[in-house]
Image (cartoon, rainbow, N blue to C red; front, side):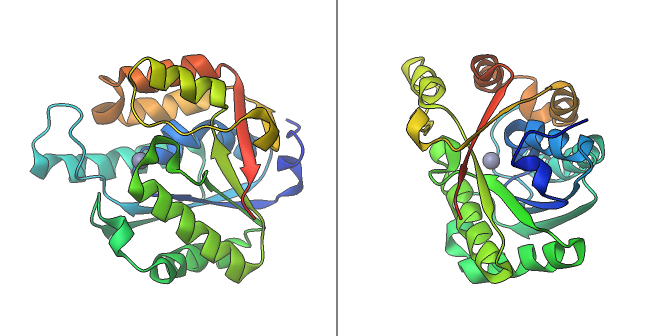
Length: 222
Ligand SMILES: [Zn+2]
């Protein structure tokens, strides 16, 4: 399969996420494109996602369940090197950026990462953990001296979601979008299915994917 430029120029890409499921719900289609195009992909996830209130698991059950779901989704996406940290879900902003960046560099270096992918500034949903993960990714990209691609939503999608009452989605006007990739969502959907605790009763996720169609939008953050 031939990758869409500029994704075709990267042999090894490091993904940086706050929570289990971000790599699938958010970056999943891009990661699948990269892997199928022959890139090696690594992943750092900073929390176990134990603060989630979706689904009917008890607070004690959610974290361990999501760790297992992430492990399964990682395999489905074809991620080669995954590192899961245990920072407190919902309080990632309290952790020093450089400490978080250390973890990214530790996985990215042996993988020979020549690009990094993470959520756009603003965190897509506005979640402070997402914003912190992006800060950490950018600090790591600076140290590694590699480009950083931010996954984003077109403003048409984010505005529509907000109008439908779906929360604080942050998108970008067309002029701020640098890369649009046509994706095949099959592998992403299989990875999403691994995160059953978060995806089965998540109408906002399904509506967002519907509005995105077969397109993913990105910005160069570095
Ligand atoms: Zn998240």
